Image (cartoon, rainbow, N blue to C red; front, side, top):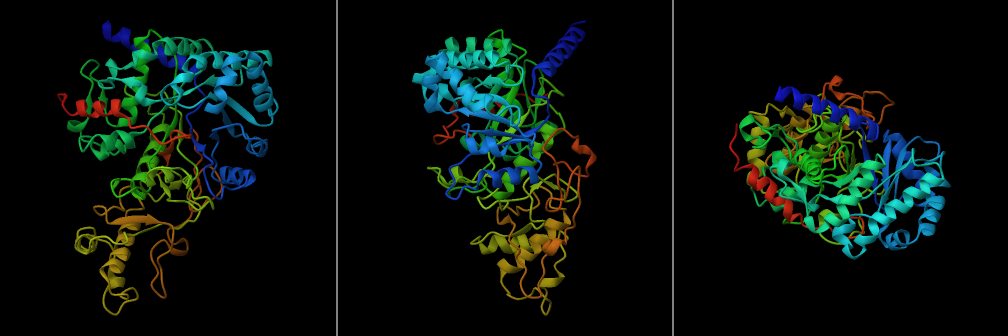
Length: 511
């Protein structure tokens, strides 16, 4: 009877979420603008349409972007920047003017669906915390007055570090010093049928774990059952950081007796390049994380607490922001460079299918420039041996023998293996001495696999974009033969509270 009661409760929760959540499932993108050569608004929208991206989040309410997005059907979250929060939170008339100028003026042509009020306010500008909920209420009242509250929801993005004691997720709670803000804020979200905006960065959890958090666990890679984390209170198994953090948010809300509020992940991603002390900020890991994330979300996998309930998500971010201060990784979260060239092809594991940012139909796996020669040689030997890559072209007298260097031969062998594996995520690593590139390494008569469309073209639910198009919305991608930031105004905080989460994971008994 107890099990039946829990099952019925789960069905009720799922039903209530289906009424509140944003449709979905979908994966959208954040559009940051700290770019030295930022494309025009019309060029950005053309890229979004070309890639079949149907949901975007803006960090402001830029007039040119909102105008360019008109009549596209793309759903848009606009934002009240942190520097405007005080004015909106202290004056109903200022909030009403903001809605009239930045929302009502563009509807219905531009499909604005939400207002994000500030960004990580409680941790970045805590002195403005007391005006956060009033600002949200004033904006909502303005929407009600304009008869737009059914179309446009109001929420505010929170960092995951606001959740303490994150593992086991069933014991999670919000930092109690903010209870005087969080309780009325969550009640507002519940009463207006809005959702909790949460920024989730497994990359930082992994980096701050000091080797305790397995990389596979952060990247959604499959884990054997004896490596899964188990919540001892619920006996739920966790196979990735993302789900554990999202469930921790659900449990933290429940600890305040506030439920039926869905979570939308407003920022997540993985950097494709980093400083010397960020060795796992690589193209391959960024590809792996985001590819697996897309598969996870679009298949409506849900979380262990709420299986089948989609966690709609926005990838951080569309473009690399070269003007952002801080570590190299801060400038390298984008799917594209400013000239709309893909940083990497977002793979859906298996069969060579790609999605999202592959516009070139050409991706290659090559040796990392400057990699240790001995490591390269070992990886080359493996690729041409146990890896069964076709290395005939780099034999003496063949078309790719010259230049006769370990790096050049390794590049050909790595690329041969990469395409043999259908460009699956993780197939271009070779213990860290390989990287994915969209620059064709072919030279003279030496033609690499993937050059000139050799890896084929296909189309899925749309026109051909590069070699595969896949809309970032809720079509079940299992039918394909494949499986698959952050603060805009300052550098990411170090997510120390989340470090405790994975450290505890690996001390739990495996059931």
